[in-house]
Length: 216
Image (cartoon, rainbow, N blue to C red; front, side):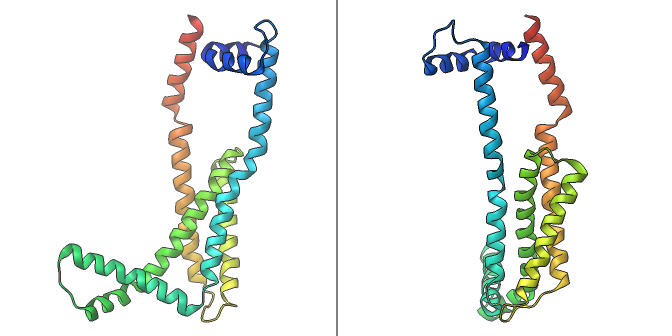
């Protein structure tokens, strides 16, 4: 009961709006009504939690779509990106290189662009997987292991899928690059959540503010 009284003190306008919206009189709209509404909100949040995995499923679909491209289509796409990089560099530095020189440079960085794409895909996948796990209170080493197993397992399945696509082959090195990208993504999520949600200094300040408000 003290918890709901504290909520009333902190957010009186919110509960006043709830009372008016429900059409109840002030005497009827008691702490029990507020408790029932908060429980209903918790149930709604619980039901919406599984939707937090939708970005991860979408990212898996995107990765699967890229892997379904033939070797020729995939190679042309990554080469265009490589050429765009060297062309942008040429314009920014004003080196005035010819088309053949730019094409040669694009070929040189083509391999690295493809591997960077692998890492980027799985970094985003790891972020999309880690945040929902964090929502379900899976933290620390458990999050590392579970998110890592999901991402690396999907990378292995994806490489196996590529072995059936024309002009594509499966490679253990690609799984390694995928795993490295996933590791970076998991670490980023851990650092972000720790700094924003579990900052010791911030939690101490919030506790002090609550104590001051209660003592008034």
